[in-house]
Structure formats: structure tokens, C-alpha cells
Image: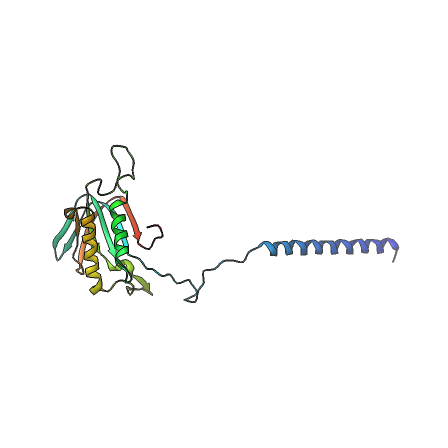
Length: 207
């Protein structure tokens, strides 16, 4: 073999070693900078189990709303708020105070004088509030079947809900705060104004 051929083979071998070295350096740098993926996996079904501990209220701004029981209208309001209330089995007085304060002070109504859209609360407008107890707000699906085991039991929920209604009445006006019939099969009729619907949970950090 001639010296020229030997020289060419040595040069090709040097190029191959240089390329392999470069690839190894790039892979090493990439491996050092790529972070492992974060997962939310836990011991329950491969997913992090969520724990809900709060009173829940779904607030709707309405042009009107009413509650019927056995074909009879038991409560009705004009413009104001329809509030569906779900009680958690761990709820205490502080949760009721939070929901009361937020429902009456959340600025969901426009100010005609200033033109601001989200500027006034239900009390400033002298509107009404209709409260409806709804344990299904704490329903979760097990397969296709709803489960309500975290909702407050009826025997404890009834007086607790009554105290919430009274609390909101005292904070505003008795005649402006109405409710449905606890535990009854109700038909809730409403005309949502907006539509505007918001959810409140008493376990929020900023109370």
C-alpha cells in the first residue's frame, strides 16, 4: 500500500474520532440541562387525590328568580342574586361568615352613574338575594353514578343552612333575603342577567 493511501486512511480515522467526540459532548450537555418531567401522580389511581374542605356557593346575577315546591311558588325575587349553597361536612361558622361577606359585597353590578361595569354590590343596588340549599354541589362521579359523601348530612345541614340565611338577612335586610325549602324537591326558575355566574369556596386563602 502506498504512503499516500496510508495517509488518507489515517486522516479519515481522525475525522471519525473527532465527530464521535463532538456528538458525545453535545449529548452530555443536553442530558445535564434537560429536567425530568414533573408528575402529579399519587397513590390513588395514579393521580393526586383532591381534598375539598369548604362551603361552596354558586352565585348568579339574575333579572328574576323563583322557587316552586309542589306547584306552588314559595319564594321569588326581581333583580339580584340567586345563590346555590353547598355545605361540606367540615364547615364551621367561619365558612358561613366568609360566604355571607362575599355574597353581599362582590361587585357584580354596573354603576349607571360612572359607567363602570363591575362596580356595585347587591346592597348598593338595593336588589334581592334568593338562597337555595343544594348538596349536589359536592357531588363526584364514581363511574357514572354521583356520590355525595362529603356533603354535610341533612340533620346537621338543616340548622346550619338556616343560620346562614339568618346571618345574610341580618347583614343586609330581612325582607331582601329569601330562600327555598330545605330538603324539598324544588323547581328553580331564573333569568340569568349577562350571563354572570361565579363560584365561591370558603377555603380560599384570601378571606
